[in-house]
Image (cartoon, rainbow, N blue to C red; front, side, top):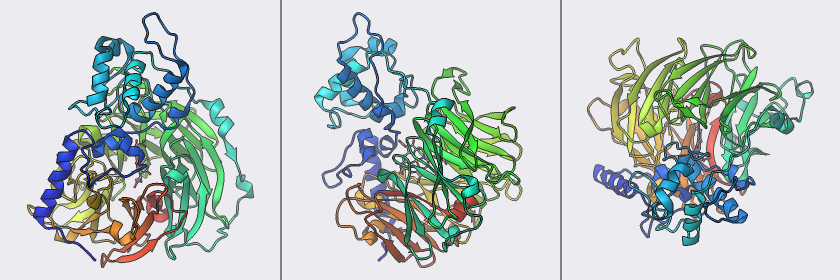
Amino acid sequence: MRIKLTTAKRALLGSAAMAIMLAGGPGWAEDKKPIPDDPKISHGGSPADRYEPSMTTLAEIQVQIPGRKDGDPVMTQEEFQTGTKIYFERCAGCHGVLRKGATGKPLTPDLTREYGYDHLHSFITYGSPAGMPNWGTSGELSEEQVDLMARYLLLEPPAPPEFGMPEMLESWKVIVAPEDRPTKKMNDIDIENLMSVTLRDAGEIALIDGDTYEIREVIKTGYAVHISRISASGRYLFVIGRDARVNMIDLWMEHPSTVAEIKIGMEARSVETSKMEGWEDKYAIAGAYWPPQYVIMDGDTLEPKKIVSTRGNIYDEQTYHPEPRVAAILSSHYRPEFIVNVKETGKILLVDYTDLKNLKTTEIEAERFLHDGGLDSTHRYFITAANARGKLVVIDTKEGKLTAITETGGQTPHPGRGANFVHPDYGPVWATSHLGDESVALIGTDPEGHPEQAWKIVDSFYALGGGSLFIKTHPNSENLYVDAPLNPDAETSASVAVFKISDMKQGVEPEFVTLPIGEWAGIADGQPRVVQPEFNKNGTEVWFSVWNAKDKESAIVVVDDKTLELKQVIKDPRLITPTGKFNVLNTQKDVY
Ligand code: DHE
């Protein structure tokens, strides 16, 4: 069954969603209850609120009250520990680990003492129009917790531990040495069509055979595992958990499994490997949220070679930021360089890995709050979202220079790696959807053939609703898929919009069909969200995660890209909270 939405229904869904989002608080209508057990709910009600980072690993560390002074509020060690846990899980994503501010305001004691207890108490209780969630009135924090947090913020923040070479070396394990690994592929899997699926709350990945839909392996990885990336040769799979544990998996083994692992910090989100010709599989790199740093590792063993801190000055204000997090990392195809997004200082680093002893880095002034992004179809340009600023930044990876910074016109662009296709009127474009509204924006990517359109937003149109995280197409596909997993409406968050690329026309709002993926999964219990379209290697099928609470059934739904009909529902008790999916060939070759 397929539903086609009328423009009126679309408008209604869009505006209802926006009304709820703009209200700032949870604002869940009775029939649209938050999805139970969802960690993101703890950040408040709007899609953007719910997408703020949780420093869940830092939340577990043991801290001491920093030297109490006369006049400090009385707080027991136990209360301080509880306050720290709540702070790292719910506040640090916006206000920073050290409370020096990020997308949210700084909350250092010099400021909080000026505000005073009563002000802090009501701020936490009622929130603010600027985006602070109403923790108290929404019931997210109890009256006791609001009181505790108002007192906690008057104290000096605890400093979480650093994580340098001794800690990394201590965590580093080579489980199968390179010389003991197979010299040829020892299994019958079509590795190029293998899908590495994040099982978020299980701290595992599932390797699913793209030909047979069979789960070939389930492999233990880091906590709240986040993304997978593939080495240039396609042999090694790298997986990173939010606890900053990197697993290196050898896909040639009879039963693919971890051959090396390391922890590169306390909180992390990104991992990548060297892809430049002549440097294939030589190095791996991972970026951390805490401590703010990236580390370059040996591509065969994960031996840590070089740790580089990202602490430094914000690109425009030129004031010091103590904790600029490392967001997306990509590998250049034009130079032996890693492309590293540094979120809070708004810098993109091009890290030359040819000589780690004499490390050369090009530091590009971009925009603050860099998040995710991908390459254009030629792989020359890196396009990335400074999402809290509503902008796209374009880097020329061949020349090593900033090319453009463009407003998308939407709120909080969130492209994943984005989607490249040839628009019938505008030529080659790259697309992003948005977290904060229902729009999809297309940016022209062909400065040679279409110089008028290059690096401008050439079109913007409506998809299902706000709360989109990922958008995808494939060179062999005629379709553009847009999800909306963080939309407050349960039906919308379980559906996907599909646009026919050849029907797109200048000046005409494109129609889309809505695929009820959640309904197709046939899950009776819970309110699963549908997240992250990912193609198989030939671009003939697109896979969706039907992401339910961890104690409820989830699924992967496979759709035939030509007919848009259901092809397969993959269910298995081991598929706990599936989210990201990474086809080996598409990820290895940066095809999206
Ligand atoms: Fe992600 C990519 C950070 C929450 C699924 N996510 C990324 C990247 C970053 C990031 C920096 C880019 C990595 C790269 O390319 O090197 N993600 C964050 C957060 O800080 C945030 C907002 C909150 C947090 O506490 O982690 C966050 N992410 C989520 C989720 O809740 C998602 C939807 C489900 C999950 O598994 O956790 C999620 N993020 C993903 C996925 C990608 C990703 C699937 C890779 C997309 C791709 O196609 O490459």
